[in-house]
Image 1 (cartoon, rainbow, N blue to C red):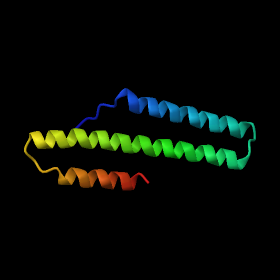
Image 2 (cartoon, rainbow, N blue to C red):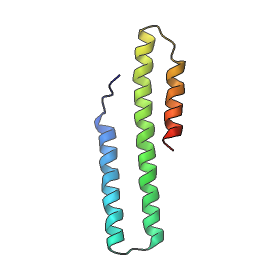
Image 3 (cartoon, rainbow, N blue to C red):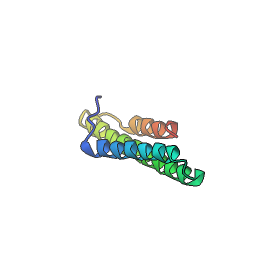
Image 4 (tube, helix red, strand yellow):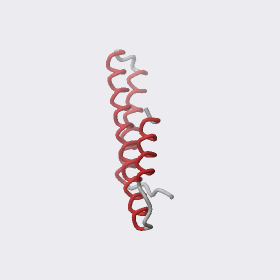
Length: 88
């Protein structure tokens, strides 16, 4: 199934892009290591949330399609869990 990515997830990733540019600027300005790492942690957290959002929305769409077709959805849930684990 092809996933249609909504504006919310695109907006999230644009914010991450801005955060990464901010970290690069901090490095160019030779900011404190602790501050840079703190910002990188914020980037990682934002990416993790984007991944979770994408998986959740995709899972919801897939479950609805499988239910309409009268199929079991257990495998889809397991695949989503594995995808989240793999993303770490």
